Amino acid sequence: MDLRSKFEITVQGIAASQGIAYGQIFVYLQSDVEVPSYQVEPERRIDEVARFDRALVVTRQQITKIKNEVEKNIGPEEAAIFDAHLMVLEDEALIGETIREFESSGRNIETCFHKISSRYVQAFAEIDDEYLRERAGDLRDVAQRVLHNLLGQAENSLNRLADQRIVLASDISPSESATLDRSAALALVMDSGSKTSHAVIVARSMKIPSVVGVRNLTQRVTNGEWAIVDGYDGIVILNPSESTLFRYGKIQEQKKSFEARLLEVNRQPAVTLDGVTVSLMANIERAEEVMKAKAYFADGIGLFRTEFLFLNTARWPGETEQFVAYKSVVEAMAPLPVIIRTLDLGGDKPMAGKSELFPKENNPFMGFRAIRFCLEHQDIFKEQLRAILKASVYGKVRLMYPMISGAEELARANAVLAECRAELRGKGVAFDEAMQVGTMIEIPSAAATADLLAKDCAFFSIGTNDLIQYLLAIDRVNDRIAHLYEPTHPALLRTLRYVVDQARQQKLSVSVCGEMAGDPIFAPLLLGLGVDCLSMSPAWLPSVKYLVRAMTMADARALAAEALTMSSPKEIYAKCDAFYRARVKME
Ligand code: PEP
Ligand code: MG
Image 1 (spheres, rainbow, N blue to C red):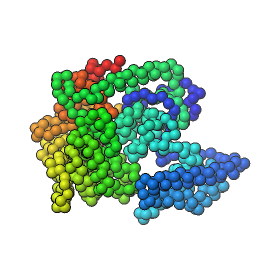
Image 2: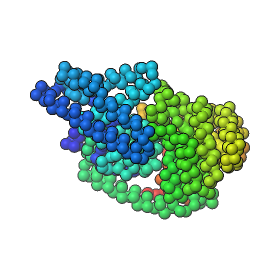
Image 3: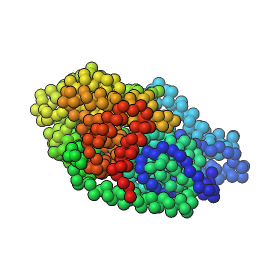
């Protein structure tokens, strides 16, 4: 529907990444394109076939271009994948049957092509032969591309936005979000999702305003609509009036001058008013992001999500490629520490085109992911462990395992690491013998057995994104229950206190690396509970540091102590919010 002729419409969603943007919407249609269906007048049927031909030609040009780029930048073997895609476009059966379907039904060509290609995809997917099953993926990819071209949505790639746009999508997968065009995405709005869905983590790291949980907005607007995205209050205003634009212009100016003030603390140490130094580290996903961590004077890398080396690539990054990536980060940060997390692949982060390793699961967040995957595929795990060990001589590396559920699993992971160490020692390859090994605490069973885990590792890093979802049974990417995802829930506070106490008793350091750590509203609560270090997207370091420098640790401890006596998450949140507002004034 064309909202331009209508009045301003405000859509309430969930505030996911702060900031305000104004611009035109680009509706990003993913794999499941919604195909309109209509009857084509007999006199327009020749044009319809010509339209189909044109879409096939454009698709061929696009794929050839990608193939050439891949060949140039990666290699001929990888580029060969696209030959299979080009062959789909020449498939007599697919094209011929689409035309015949069109001639007999008279429905628009998209409908006919969608029907026939879906039938083929289905047939391939059911074949009991791995090679042919993989062809189903090729066919689906090409079919989507043809449909996008027929529907006039050729520029649908997130890394090739034609212009600066507000990206509106129904959902964005972790691998898609890694391709988000940093310079062109003004804001990110999603029908589904929550504050800790991966696309939002990426948006926050890029300081892109984001609102999620706007339900079916993708179906209600079309490309080019104008909108304001307010990532503070979680609203999207379609077709804003002049007075709304004026009001938001003023707010934006205020926020900009506040941002400038924040940057003044960039080079200053993170020391509270009563003299306690707090460690503030950075979360990164790609080696290049280390530059951002340095630009914001991070005290180290608190979380390197290495699985992102494996997403968005048709190849398996081998030991050498991984070593080069880890070494570049370690060298850039030296002598500051770099905590490299072993692969958290699987679940919602499967590798594309590797369905044999990552079969579809009904419950991916509770499925075959992270350390579970690595312990079953030890060849893959060992390749990574060796690459990390080899990188450890170039600076200060710490290694950490994701999704550990108990002491036995930790012991198994450590045993594999010991084998890798022995192997390298045997070959005379140098590595840091004193490299610390830690574990993430992100599963309730790990938190409840923190005393046991502490015996077998050197530090804890609490992954609140997952810990909250498992503790409260709230799927972190389900917008229907996103309002129940409460970081101030007493269950979480008690769990954090228990983990910190156990760490203290056994002299382990403990950090938080979930999104909570980078939110200045929650930072005092975490520090007051006794957490030593907060690790966050680099862009959030100034906001948290600004607050740390404006508070006393004694006040933060009092806040945490009071919060621990309270029962309502909302009231605890209000306390944290008041704590923040009393110390940080926007104007
Ligand atoms: C977490 O769960 O808090 C975390 C940091 O890991 P990820 O967001 O990568 O699952
Ligand atoms: Mg996690």
